[in-house]
Length: 402
Image 1 (tube, rainbow, N blue to C red):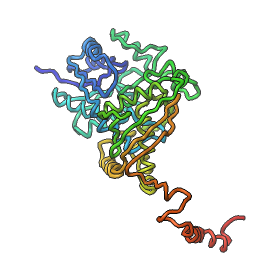
Image 2 (cartoon, rainbow, N blue to C red):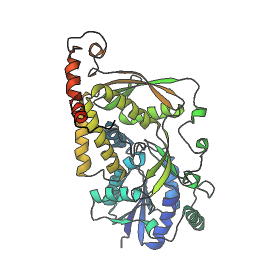
Image 3 (cartoon, one colour):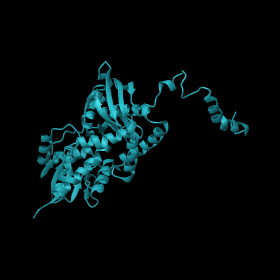
Image 4 (cartoon, rainbow, N blue to C red):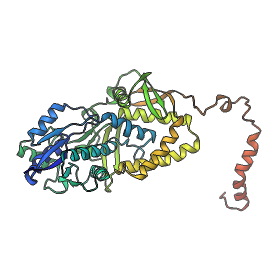
């Protein structure tokens, strides 16, 4: 008789490594480990060997990093999304794609359930389960952290040792890390307390600290076509290649280090340290190009919708009518966001070094102090009279304080 199957969202980290033996102890099913490649740097042979050694019946590593770049990162850049004005949403953007891929493999294997290793305090349990529900509303979801007796990462390490599962985490270095093409996040341990100053040099993987960055500035030019980056320093690249190249350039110049206190979906505050070098460069360059090519009114509406978009992505609602509607607006605004942005990078700083576009709304003749056919200085008098009229009426009525 064929055994039931459970697809596990596998990363090879502490939480998912101990989940395999736990599932085998508690469910009469074969465990199918699926480690979705969204651009993280991995020794895939080693990850597969570890999954099988931990008790998985099968292992898959679908490579979807190009799709991640073009269909998730690029729309976020078009929308200038920053959760609470800071977080570039690296993890939140990857989870919907991972969830979709997990459902695909669950259907392929005939699995009745999908298991994830997210904690009951975290955001990712919401993001994964929202994504799974969007593609299979009937799929059973198993969330061990909401079931088992393991209460902490220290307990998890003890369980791993008990089951003979090799893990790299220790009770001294107990950080929880998530890596993809967009970023690397770091949480846990001494990072948790906002009062602690953290030694970034001991934590960061792909980004230099400002102290260790080169002493000479580096310039980078990013070319956009309708809001999408298509070339770096004049060399045409795919979305994946653009982000990869900018990760390298930004990383060596200490770009994209964010130490953030954020409000989680479930109501508590947490602290995270993020490395987002390529994403930071893309966002900065894109916003500078929009400032040149979009009207004031469009930028104002877009800013409000950017905040809304960031909130819904953070909350796991990528697959929603709400998101689709806002993305449609964002796409329309990008029709003229074409041109080159040059940035000067130096020890964590990005400063403008030139922005050009065939759709630039800046006119040197109009904006300068000289004469121009489109503007007469005398016209300003009537404009001022109309603009100040409400203030004059308020003064007459005695409504303004002295």
